[in-house]
Length: 88
Image (cartoon, rainbow, N blue to C red; front, side, top):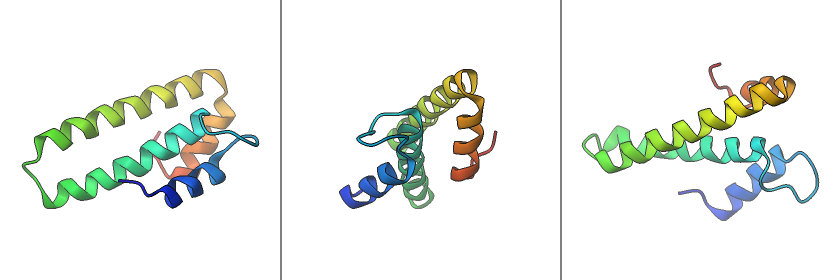
């Protein structure tokens, strides 16, 4: 689970303009943080299939947002992939 402080930090770091909480970059950053947390959980709880299903849904949602960003504004896509250290 992401703490309120960590979520605020991510929003401040990836926002595109003042008051931005829902742009693609912010959503992708928040999803990436949740994916990292669930991945760590699954390393210790290998048989937790419900969390594994949730992880797959989050990964799919993030990939959908990345495809949307790549199709619309490729410069922003390259920037967010580089900043988050994701594979293309």
